[in-house]
Every structure is written in structure tokens, then in C-alpha cells.
Length: 399
Image (cartoon, rainbow, N blue to C red; front, top):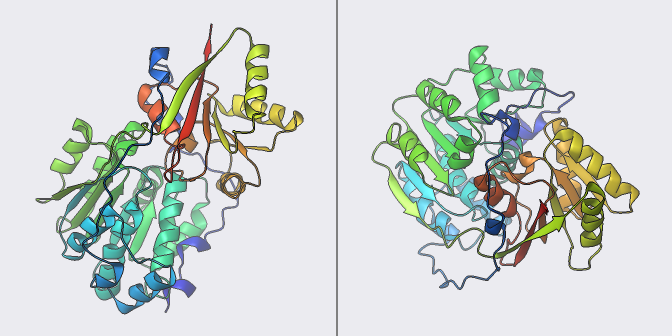
């Protein structure tokens, strides 16, 4: 039966809240490292880049006719660099390590070869692992769009959603499973999921998964899949932890790097000094009232402080919403949807929103509370300065 009308990933309807393993509180401890405030100050600049000339067009890729039809309907014509260089390799069945900035089209880079194989090979089963619920849902949406009408089943396994619909989708023997490490592991423990026949594995945003403390879970999941597999790894950075995962799992992978510059180059960074809580709040008020602040993502430390600040901004007349791990998945999705469509232009968040959220027109990232680490800081401010625009990041520092 058609993919679009059977066990769609998006048919799951969350009804209550579950513990979210994929939030920043899963880090080893809650203590903050000292970060010299000088590191929060940097002029923004648009990095000049040589225009990329692709080798292929989407019409050139040897994929199933159904996929080509969907790509054409989506208006896909010219691939991005990561797509241009990795899709042919993926279609050949090669293991790939793709290094590229966030927001460069990595999802389609692995969605095309994965979907083409599961459509054309009934013995192909794909596992896609992402660090956060939101990113897993974005991947699911892309798979559904590119694979619309395909005669395959899928399952989306994420926290914050009830197990019942997930169990029903797994009983349909899905060829594509997308999820977060914690929830996938839950299903393995309950024996509702057997990964031994999964012969395609995709790890997206590997560095973020490891930053969030999932290295043990990731190694466990990789140990459960078929030894005869195709492995696709995508990451924005490549450190020793990422290398160790890849070296222990991939088979002679082809490395593709299209990373351009430093993610924070096009984000102007500065600090805001304050002396008291009252002065801090007033300075935030004055900042948000500026005409140049068209869409602001504000970070605070805890769920409670996020809710308190969000409600205070509402009373002051700002169009605000909030997102954190204490909210159910439908609540988080509604808040992100309103922020994305500019129904609200201020979103107050814990670090859960720093990872995997791709909203192109955020003008300002405001660190109302300092991040736990400089790596967290980079992830936070990377939400601004997208789609060829210059963004701005401001960090509040007590005098």
C-alpha cells in the first residue's frame, strides 16, 4: 500500500508526556565551566565563498521514478554541495562520513539513497538516529515528502509521546525507523524492536549526540544492527569521540567535507552587563523593544526560569512562547510552529532548543543565562545568522 496512506511516521498522536532523555539535563553534570566573557565578543562578517558548481542535478540521480516525481513536485533541481557529493556514493552503497555545517541539506543527502534502497529492495531496513525529538521529526517529514506514495512502512520513536502508537507501528514491520537514542533503546529493552536485520544505519548530527551524553547508547545501538550494513554518518564537527565511533563501525568510509568557515563567523557577538535582577530584566525589555529584533531566541537555565521569564514577557506586551523538556511533544511542536511562522517573535528556551532546530530568520540569540560550556554557546548562537544573513548574539554577564 502507498507510503502516504499506510503507516506514516506522522500518524502518531501524542497524548501525554513522558520523560525526555534528550534534553540538556542528560549531560553528566549540571555545573558550568568558566568561559571568559571575551569569548562572547566578536564582530560578525559575511564570509565570502566561491560559488559552488554542482556536478549533478537531481534529475541525474538514478533513483526510483516515484522519488523523481516527488523531487520534481518539491521543486528540487540543483543539489547543495553535500547532496551533490554524497547522494551518488550513497546510491552505490558506500559508507559515508559527511562533514557539513548545519542547515546545508544533509537530510535529503541521506534520505534519497536510503529511500531508494528500501523501495527497490524488500530486504532493506534502515535505522536513522538523531539527537533530539525535533530533529527526528524534521527527518520524518523529509522522508515522508520524498517518499510520498511509496509502498513501505515507517516508525517514529521519540520521547514525549505514548508508547502505544509506536508499538503498533513497530508491529507493522517498518522498513524505516527514525528515532532518538533513548527511546530506541527503550524499545530494544522491551523487545518491541529487533535491529539485527537493519542493514542501513544513519547517524545524523553525531557530534551533538555525543555532546548530549549519548555515546554509550549510540555504541549499544550500533552493536545491535546487522554486521552487513551500509553506514552513513553526518556531523558538523569531527573530534576524537566522533572518529572513534566511525572507526569502530564504518567499513572503509568515503569522507566528504563541504564545511565552510566557522559556524559563528556570520554572527555578531557581544555582552550585556547588568547589576541586579531588575536591571537585567529591564535591559532585556529594552533590547526586545528595538526595531532590529525581528525574531529572538532567548536561553535560560531551567524549565522554571524559562516559564517565569516567558510569562513576564507576556505581561510586558511581547509576543512570546516557551519550549523546554518539561513540555509535552505536542506543546513543543506548537510553540516551534508559532515561532517559525512568526505568530510569536520571542521564544524562551532551555538548551533543548539549541540542537536540531532549523529556523532561517532568527535575528537574535540572547543568552539570558550563560551556557554550561563554550560548545553549548556555539550551538546556541548557531540558530542565528542563517540563510545568508548576518545574525546577532548577546550574552548577559553580571558585573
